[in-house]
Amino acid sequence: MNLDPHTHTMDIQTLFNIVAALCIAMGGGIIKALWDKISLGEERHVRLSDKVHDINTLVVGDYVKRDEFTRVSEQLRGELVNMSSQLFQKLDNMNESILNRLERRHQSND
Image 1 (tube, one colour):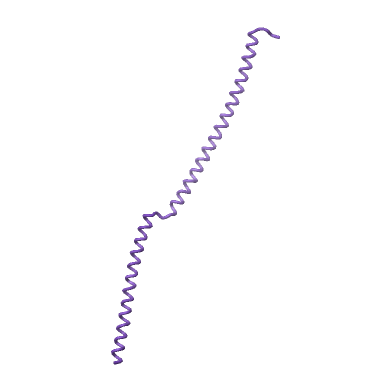
Image 2 (cartoon, helix red, strand yellow):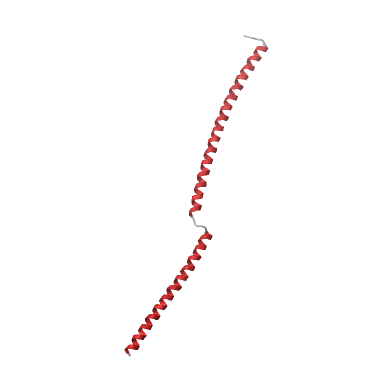
């Protein structure tokens, strides 16, 4: 057995250095694994963000905005009013024509 205090201290120092090196190596490995997971998570996040943006673009692009719907509705209403006016005018003209023919027939029969 070696009773020299300097040798015994050196053995403890060596043991401490080995344990410290192992702990640092394991800590480095854990930090590397965490870093890789974070990097992978960031890549997934970017891809998912892009997908969500694309979906939002599709959804927003496919629907009619309220202002545009109101504007088009007013235009259609105006066109329908105009068409109905023209239709009623033609019906009035047809009624007048029929009434005139009936009057002429009635006058010719008298």
